[in-house]
Image (spheres, rainbow, N blue to C red):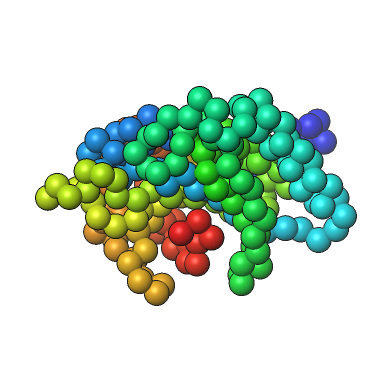
Length: 216
């Protein structure tokens, strides 16, 4: 906060701790062991694009940064290992820019291990915030599906998404069960399975539904 902000009593919003994203890989291991859910290799960052040329330049910068990050990891399949999700860990995958009918845009990552996805999501968040567009960020979403162990009686048999609230620095589970319907009981079960592995949003009223996910 600058000197004038202090004198005039202005405050700036506290930026959430983006490092919370890096707790997701270990939480994914816990989730797989407890419920059979595995990462699908898909994730997305949702934001409200502001008008003006400046943000178009930010988008171009993000694309360049992602290209650099992908080249540093290596070509798709390099050193890849099957994580049980059907996606190869370590593969760079593809990036798409997808609009939705609510006026938001999604940077969608398709392919790669959970560590790679977290790195890319963190990069997009950081780039948008550094450009001064942090308030435009809504959330990021990571997809999970039943893995090979889902036949056991205590395993989860439906897809589940972990939503990261950009302005809160917290996660919550989202379990769509039909057209604009959700399975709240399953969401609460996933929350209990995650335990302390993730900073879960304590205010359940903030667990808003994310319909028509482009990573479904």
